[in-house]
Length: 460
Image (cartoon, rainbow, N blue to C red; front, side, top):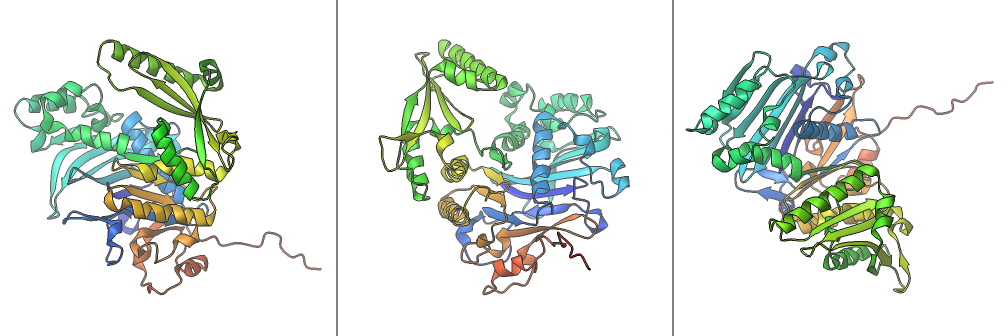
């Protein structure tokens, strides 16, 4: 689970007074109600939901971009265009480091991982992974001062046999300003972690970033739709989607010729599918794969379900939906944008994997009542799960103390210099009987647009 995220000198995020980073936190505040919204292990209390508000261009999406930038950099290296991502409000920032840090909970323990990078030079200058203790002490796992060419390995990486290997890896890149140690330690190191499981935290942090942190932009589906790969799941999906008032009452899995599917897909997607099928066929033949492969591809608002079983039979299907008349079926492309958006989001309600979902513009294409219903349903289903959902939104109906806690409501606003500031509603002394949505729209908490006259009145 995500505990905190800190960023400095990235897009519209400059720095707080004193040079500290802007901070977004999922640590619960002093609110006593709605305890079912909280993960509590006796040492830390974490929110399972947070809604981030702000005017257009205030910095909501920049917060998501900052988290996604850090994720991409860990998994794949600095993304294209990174040299221009520093905060341009001050020309001196071009030569200053940008700061990215996330605190996460893994297996009942708490860790801080981060790095500093001079974006204009593509140059990492520091990196660290620290275990955070309940008594506010820290235990270093590794830390690097790349500019000085020094590193420090914690005791967990200094155990007999392991120490020599870790020093070899760390020393090899101690002066390398282009590489992250965490990324290097997750490239072809499978045998290392099998031989030295005590070093597995390096793999587990990387794994969490890769598989447990799910970040979605407004024009991107939330998942790979793998939940649609079996008819039993589709029945449950139709039941849920019908409860949201979409009019869908049934579905049918329809066989589709393979050439039709492959001809409609982009070349890189087609190549990925064929490579995956070839890989799984080889695994079946040598007995390394026992479960069938199921892939769900969405292209041009059509779902294609591709399955491969142990008999090496490939099946291509699509899903069509019924409304009142079950003998008349509709493809996904014939459904409303709101229904398609719901299908994009449904994995969040179905997930049992303990993931942290971050969704930019949750309310895109959704009726305000549907957005409210979705969040309400999430908060009802998450009581027994350790899943987090963080969204940006303009939907003021969510600003309801019957639905949310004060500490689940966040704002991002730009000051007169153009810097984005992040703050929680809990920083305000707001009464529980306060009409929070009305106060927000009136600009009491910032984060709303301030309009100038579009067409000035011409004086005679």
